[in-house]
Structures are given as C-alpha cells and as structure tokens.
Image (tube, rainbow, N blue to C red; front, side):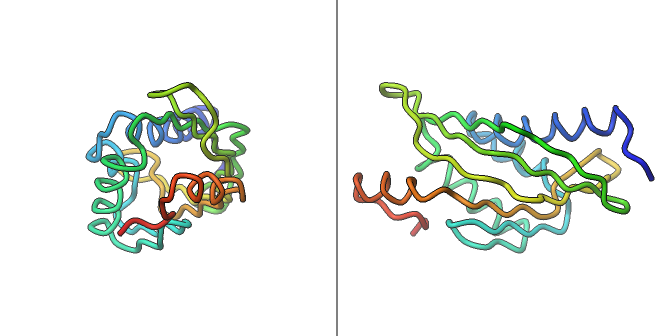
Length: 146
C-alpha cells in the first residue's frame, strides 16, 4: 500500500480532531473520528460498540473533560498492511483554573483504517501515567465514570 505524505497528514489531522472535539464537547465530531467497528481500552473502561463509545464520550465531556485541553505529542505513524499504527503521548492541561498538567499518558499503537470518509480510528488503547491516580485521589474522584 505505502502511506503517502497526504495519508500521513490526514492521520495527523485525525489525531488533532480527536482531541479538539473532546475539548469543544463535540460528541458527534468525536464519533466521526471512529470507524464503524470500534475498540477503546482505557483506565475509564473498555468500549466495543459505537453506542457505548458515544455514551462514554458524552459523560466524559460533561464531567471530566470540562475545562481541560488535550494535546498529542510525539506522534509516530507506522504502516501496517492496509492500515496504520499511531503512537502518541497525551498531555491533559487544566485551563479553566490556574493552568497546570492534569494527566499524562500514551496512546500506544492506535490502529487507524482508511474508510470512504477518510482515516478513522478502529482501536485505541490509552495508558495513563501513575500521577493521574494521585491527582484523582487528591480530589476524591474515581477514574471510571459511574
């Protein structure tokens, strides 16, 4: 297949849109970043259907993501058959209060596929760094939504 420069730019745009839609509480835009068949694994739960992903994101943007800015850094794209694997570091900033880092982690080897609508995530696995649990404990909140 061979990833073209345009493919790589479209994948980078997908990674950015993923974060921007969460930050702007755009659940429809967030869901547009996903293929029809989805798998999302995270400290917040594992979601295997679009319906469960939508419910998670709607809850996430109304609670945990409010006043936060999500940034992807060190984005690496690796070709894999008819897909690509994307690894990126995640930094979450508090921006509604005094700015500070809330969480860091990594999306490790996210699988993106080409669809008629462009590149979309099929599988993502988020691994948060240990400091996030301490951050939540200090505020008396749990990592998993109720």
